[in-house]
Amino acid sequence: MSGTGFDKMGGSTVPTEMQQSWCGRVVARHFAALPLKRRILALVSRSEGGQFTSLSLRAILDRHYGVRVGNHSYGSLLEPGMADRDTVIGSYVSIGPNVRRLGAAHPVDSLSMHPYWYNPVLGLVPADADVERTGCEIGHESWIGANVTILPGCRRIGIGAVVGAGAVVTRDVPDFAVVVGSPARQIAERLTEDQRRGLLDARPWELAPADCRAALERLGDGVR
Image (cartoon, rainbow, N blue to C red; front, side):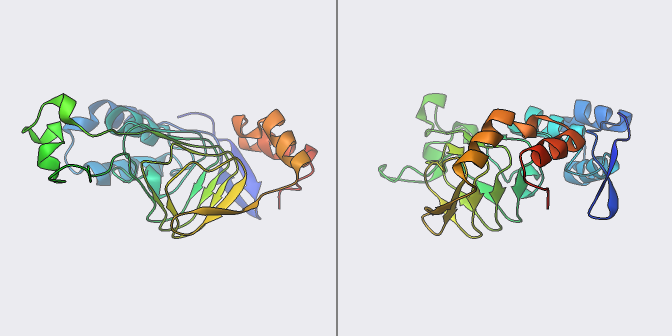
């Protein structure tokens, strides 16, 4: 396991170093053959400080589910099956419960929309019959509220963006935008132009929490 890396935040002491235990390494290596996969993954993740800091969770999501997750991000898209393949989640991303990222849609222009006739995994059609499956990048320091659905038309949710609870995201979300509704529409933009430019230049999400906090304080945030 890596160093302890404890910081005091909000009056409590929390682990902030990214961690991987020897047990986590073994589980990550043999995950495909394990029974009770999700239960074992939850135990390993908890032993490594939870979703914020578990490197084994990130390795398993990348290797077996095609989902890449940056440091210190957390939420329902880190649960296996909640994000389709080719999802990339940045660092310090906050994701509410029951968020789903879908990378493909049923072919509404076809005579039949059943997956028998387009999903080659089911064994009835060749690989070239598959529908388009899109990826999506979720930017650093973004916040996605509870019960959000991200549809295939959305390829990127920007850095520092906010997606309101219950939104249905059908297209890209700009950096620092606030979007709500179904389909999601922009209603505001976060921070001042100088603050946005300062964050994009400083890139504090690339730093460990203590250094990130210091960088935010230098930018005048105060880290409330």
